[in-house]
Length: 218
Image (cartoon, rainbow, N blue to C red; front, side):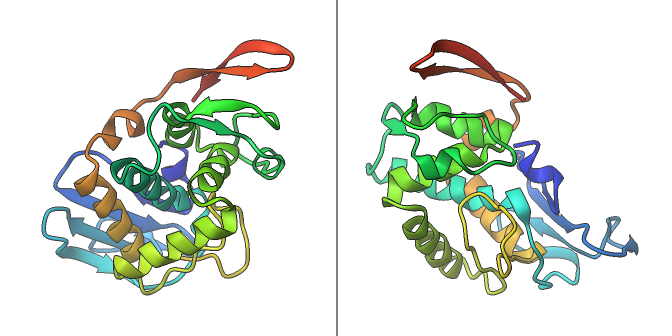
């Protein structure tokens, strides 16, 4: 999940008792929290207690950090038996058209849920995120509804999701505190996420009409 956490918000998705969420938008300066950012949160993971914060409720664009919620809903769907790790996910024209950070999947290509989650976690792949959204909810729009419902359940009051991958759309925002909330939920409910979120390199195999080719995830 290196790329997801390197953009507007930095969240420590390791199995540690503290979650740090930080926004680097606009002018910032160091403060007593130890972060050089416009807004930040230091949260104790088990209890959810905020240890330090600065402008924690400021709503800002969060780019690929959006995929933390996408992953949370993927793991929810696996837990609930709505999908399983070996399901074949078919890439739609819409998913393949995402651009930005991607693994260059072709229309009609199929990958397992397991490999799609690897692509999201390791390569921050927009195409994989949208393909999974469609696989779970039937459409990206339907999945976004689930994202916003989950955000409400988690108490994320300063968050509005408008897509599944974090591409910049006006009004698609969250806050340092809300990012900490969804990160905490992901880590507490699915500690196995640490396996892929701490993997720096892996591979998938593209299987298309042109044949098979190995693709590196970084």
